[in-house]
Image 1 (cartoon, rainbow, N blue to C red):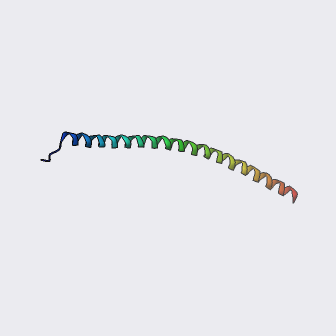
Image 2 (cartoon, rainbow, N blue to C red):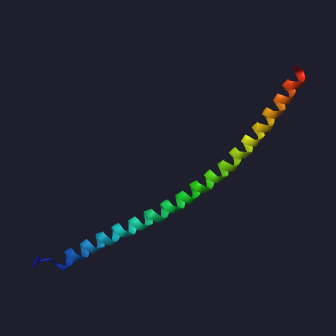
Image 3 (cartoon, rainbow, N blue to C red):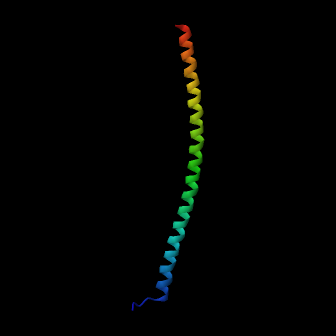
Length: 70
């Protein structure tokens, strides 16, 4: 059987635990960041809908003005 000392075992376990802790922390921070991005995208989507609606109304008014001028 391989001769593994107690110090080597503790060192390997500590590196493994550190890796797992950093991995979990990264996943959590990525989830938070993704939620912020989705909130921003929802806000921009609503604003774009309002802009499109306003542009449609303006185009309709321009067409009405052009028809009256003909």
